[in-house]
Length: 410
Image (cartoon, rainbow, N blue to C red; front, side, top):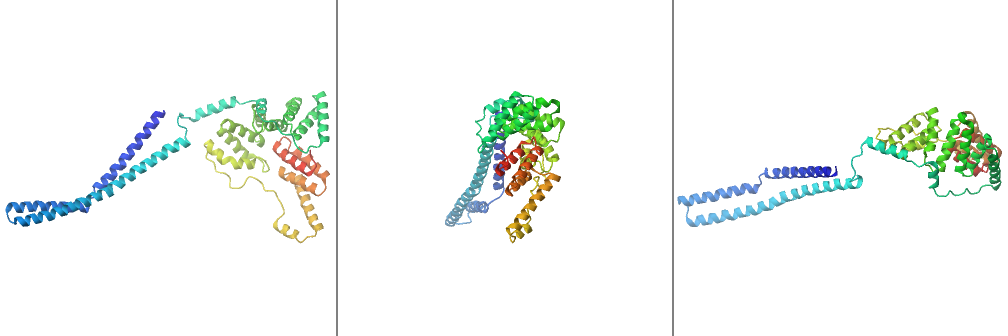
């Protein structure tokens, strides 16, 4: 196949060059220069002189003088014509040959840089087969984790909390069917960064619940496994996401990670389909919407799909004080300013309690309450947020960071 391609490319390039050169040559030849007319006239004059000499109507001295004068003019026109021919034909021919050489170098050089010389054609059917083979050959969860470097321990962990978790481990080991104990252990192992231990405890939760396991339970297990594998989706985690989609086809977390799986194996067409469904059905506060929006155009290109992104931004803006409120705060006393801040915090609290909101807004409320000195309320809000976002590891991670910084979480 390579020989046929390069041979055809060379023949086409040569044919184009020949056509261009012939066209320019014909254009030059079809236009008669002024010097050519002069030459014809002078040659006709020489012929006329020869005829007059034969008839004897002009003296010999006059014939020599006329012949010398006409010959001198003819030689002058020959020199002018030669210079004109070089100036017309030479530069044009050089320009054409230079252009052809440049196009040829750019074409072959560009293909050598951007293409894959030496590789045969790879039609869509063959690419799908390769992708599915790659899917079947993926490493399992244990192998993925074993290939990762050691995870650094979390800093600034309360020793008392570590001691409590150690006691919880011992208690759960003696009562492996204790559902509440396993759920608590999974949560606290995750808080300590022990992700493998966390998903193993959650795996036990699923075993105890059996058919009564919820989507949130499955997602907690799957996302813990993804975190433990440093963002890679193992076949075991993918199976859990597929189980969620079988029951809840519009679950945003399952759609997001299933799209990631298909990107990892090269099935960009399927990844686009999953993410497009997420984009169309996910709630406004979904943590995946912004990332999907930022990557959909590039994903559509590699998937070979025509895609027009929505005009409006997919990420909801967090509400805050308007310009008038900020300006008014400049003239307030410290007591009045504190009262205004408290009013805004209470407004955010009421809205989250009645309408719900994003994890970022919950984290903002936790931080604000802690700054106001109401750490008990901040801890209660954190506990409520953990229930609200159960099974959504990314949101829980952000909430946990806010709680730790506020001094109400471990």
